[in-house]
Image (cartoon, rainbow, N blue to C red):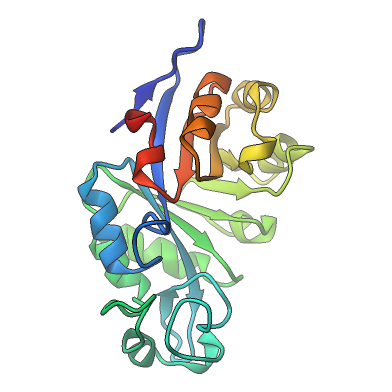
Amino acid sequence: MHQTLSTVPGRFILVNCIAHRGFAGTNPENTVAAVEAAVATGVDGVEVDVRRCGSGDLVVHHDETVDRTTDGSGSVADFSASELAGLSVEGTDAGVPTFEDVVAAIPDGVVLHAELKERGLASEVESLVGEAACETVISSFDAAVVSAVESVPTALLVSEGTGAVERATEVGCAMVHPPVDACDASLVDRAHDAGLAVNAWTVTESAETGRLREAGADGVITDFPQCCPGSV
């Protein structure tokens, strides 16, 4: 599944598979179990969401509240890390993990894509992944968040293609992550000319993977292992 070559004439782009929230379409999202299951398929990278909980710990959870994915209710900021660990994510035995636990589940050769959902997390994230020697990309929709990162590569998440390359370049990113619908050959070419890699989110259909590969994208961020380039 690793690094499939693009078939576009004149393009030799390694198309990586990045498991969105640990393949959220098939696993309890943003859990250690999801990360381990995704790694077992041979992915190139795993994407998770990071925020701070009430005890001050960094935890892996997408929403501001626990209501959508767990059997609990309320703001993540009102729970301690141990309380979050005791919740059931999507009806499973998996709880909301700490970021440190997720880092420990990432083996050599797999890139951790950590999307920071809040400001003020960058230095702690950098410290934790540095101590673990975990290859990491820090991403965010917030330019101020990626601007605060000092020691690891960054990616700017964008909701549209217009101005995406320029914005990512301005804040010193190594990558730009556009939505599937906005990622075409024109955007990819502009990004590559600017020295940026392109990973598109969130792929849910194999046909989307094929189109992105033809456009020359560097990677797909997907909910499903069957949408990875090596499976299409």
